[in-house]
Image (tube, rainbow, N blue to C red; front, top):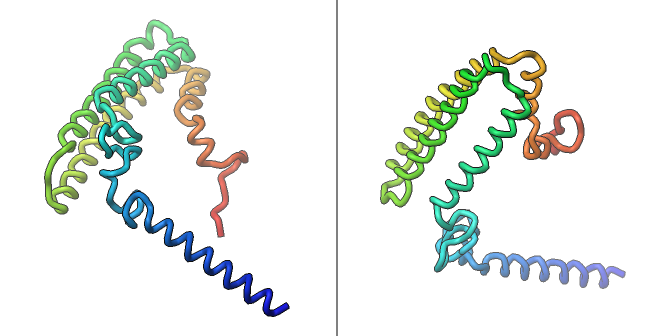
Length: 183
């Protein structure tokens, strides 16, 4: 019986080492998908065509995102059933969102394909985050102004629209309450 256990343990160890070797000798040359070598992986935007998750035509991706955003805002407007006296706040909210998205596009374009040092990279990221924060504060003020103009039912619609999406539900887990940390 002890011999069988020893043989199984040796077989499991050999199999584990074999799988580890295969993982390290994968398509990223032992660096893993997040540790470098992405220029060879088409899914991560590298490869000959660059049409992957991060690759492809940035203009086309931006166009798709703008279309998605416009459709979402049309849906929200229909669900809110805005009254004529609420239209100015709605238009200001849309204008703030458009300005925010334009600022994000500008920041991305400025950072794209820039040759830089590590420290300049971090400084650029900090500057971009500060610009995004300022833009987000402007958008939040416009959202607050719209929210103040809404009646209680419309506020519930807006609350649900922005806080109850599939990704948020997934992050909270399938239960009604918050998920417990894994121990």
